[in-house]
Length: 120
Image 1 (cartoon, rainbow, N blue to C red):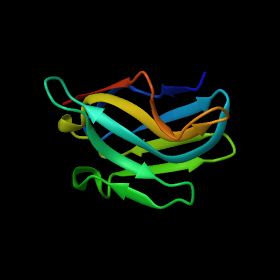
Image 2 (cartoon, one colour):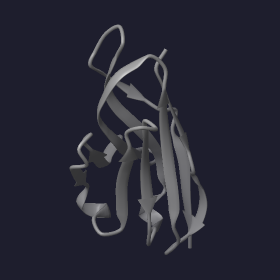
Image 3 (cartoon, rainbow, N blue to C red):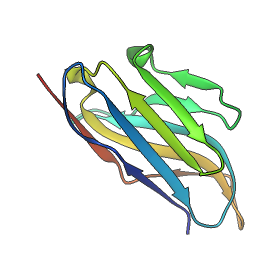
């Protein structure tokens, strides 16, 4: 069974930083794009950033210059470094990976989410 497990969420003051991690495990053949999405209360899940296996990145306009996505392909892990956090960044952050398992795919897998709370 393929899983994504996130970590690194928590409470931070405005202007602070957090680093999220998401590790994939299971019978994985290949991981294609990986990414982070955020979902604030009462809102739809929205793209934050994505990264290809080769390191090409894409960011939502709202986080450009503040957030950095990276990945370690050998560890099957994606990271999100979040700096200069704002109140509006508070949300549950979900990791996503498009991957092919050893049995099937490609398909999308989601993590369970990690809560980021920003206080003034």
